[in-house]
Image 1 (spheres, rainbow over the protein chains, first blue to last red):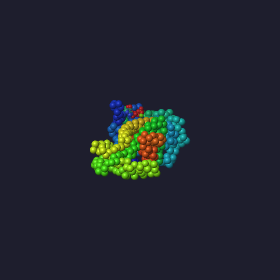
Image 2: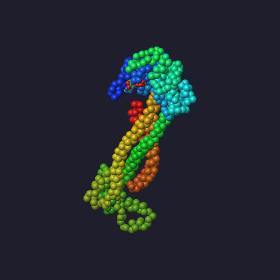
Image 3: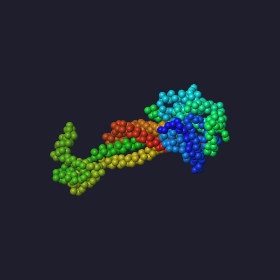
Image 4: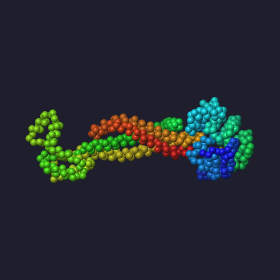
Amino acid sequence: MPKSKKDKPIVAFNKVSKIYDKYRQEVVALEDIDFSVAKGEFVSIVGRSGTGKSTIIKLMIAEEKPTEGQVGVLGWDLNKIKDRQVPEFRRQLGVVFQDYKLLTRKTVYENVAYAMVVSGQSVVKIRKTVPQVLDLVGLKDKGRRFPKELSGGEQQRTAIARALVHKPNLLVADEMTGELDALYAWEIMEILLKINQMGTTVIIATHDRDIVNKINKRVITLEEGRIIRDQKQGDYLL
Amino acid sequence: MINLLRILKFGVKNFFRNIWLSTAATSIMILTIFTVSVLVMLNLVGAMAVETVKEKVDISIYLQPESTDNQINQVKNKLLSLPEVKSIDYTSKEEALREFQQEHQGNDLILSSILELDENPLQPTLVVKARYPEDYAVIADTINVDEYKSIIGKIDFDDNKEVINRLTNLTQTLKRVGVGLSAVFGLIVVLVVYNTIRLTIYTQKYEIRIMKLVGATNNFIRWPFIVEGVIYGLVGSIGAFAIMYPLVEYFSPLVSNFLGEQSIDMLAYFNEHIVKIFLFEIAAGILLGVISSLLAVRRYVHSI
Ligand SMILES: Nc1ncnc2c1ncn2[C@@H]1O[C@H](COP(=O)(O)OP(=O)(O)OP(=O)(O)O)[C@@H](O)[C@H]1O
Ligand SMILES: [Mg+2]
């Protein structure tokens, strides 16, 4: 499988449109989206509700296919990716969502290990990797807790840890701080910045004005399915 | 290897996740495999019984003691000319007497009483074997004509014909009922297991979504459900076997009595083929389980 080369973008959207078919009514979610993300970047995608942020994320993780245009991620042509190739692709990136998507009946450790278990990794490798990533997100001592015994921020950090077990080159997060208090949200952000500094490209979709302004990284602003602004060191302007 | 173990573990978990539903699916599986096996078994026993009795069937034609060799040969040749006749065994008066003496060796009373008569009272007999039991009527009709009236005393064949007819009808009915019932039960079990697995898939929607997001291989997502189907089949077939054995034990003498044939021993047959029967049940169970789960997985896992 083609791995991304240094000079090639990690993510490339080329004239992408996405039209949803809902009850035979067409919803134009994205129109003519053009952007690329280079290795090592930290990108925030911002915009009002319903402007297509999540749709961009879904296209990026091959959960949806574009109606028009090309989407390339980590060297994969997502227009042409086959169903049976998706698992391999997904193991090369990490995904985090607003609702954490943790398994309530598994401990923190088990939740993180789960991603490795179901992709057929060896027990030895699991035992080595899981503590590492738990340490990275500051949950080293909480591996035995269940999700309901954790704060929202800790649950989200568990989800990040899980997203990191495959040592991805790209971490994608949709609204990951949406349900958190400002303080917890900033903790999460610091973890993402740390991961970014270690070389992982990070792309987040967010509403969080304060955070976007604080980190002073690249900002892509959407309005009604179009990119209206793409700033190298931008802020949340809406 | 580790993956195989994990998939098995996931499958077993699926089975126990909704224990009532699994119990229901397993019960239907037991019932189906049990029914099918009993029907197959009965068919085999029926066929066996027919064969046994067929072998024994023959027409004994008792000829008048005073018939001449010429007359006897005439009857014999007539019978031999029939394509339905497989063989004819002729026992002359003298042979009959010798057999009689041999049979009653040691019983002086009988032996001396027969010797006291000045003439051999025994009848020469023709024992005719037909190719097929259905042919006995033709054979009987051929000799039951005026031409031979004077030399033929008695024709013996009716009893067995009755048994054969009864058995043949029974086996044929059994076969038809068996195929029909098996098909119906098979369909029911596939539907039940299919829906059970569909439900497992739905209750696990969330987990499956997470699996897909973290890059679980398709095998990891699909095979546990197929394992679940196999478990229904396995437990179902073992259960069916477990209830079948005592039942065969109980009914075997009854069947023998009903057929009036002690040589037809269901239990002995069952014991003789126990491994085959067990494997047949397991194979049937697994097949049904796999078919149902494959259908459910193909239809529902993809859309999650
Ligand atoms: N599966 C779907 N079927 C039909 N329409 C959809 C679907 N998903 C999203 N949409 C529509 O597409 C548009 C963009 O949705 P999207 O979820 O990408 O917005 P968003 O920017 O993430 O919003 P939010 O900030 O509320 O999460 C919306 O109008 C939404 O109703
Ligand atoms: Mg969204």
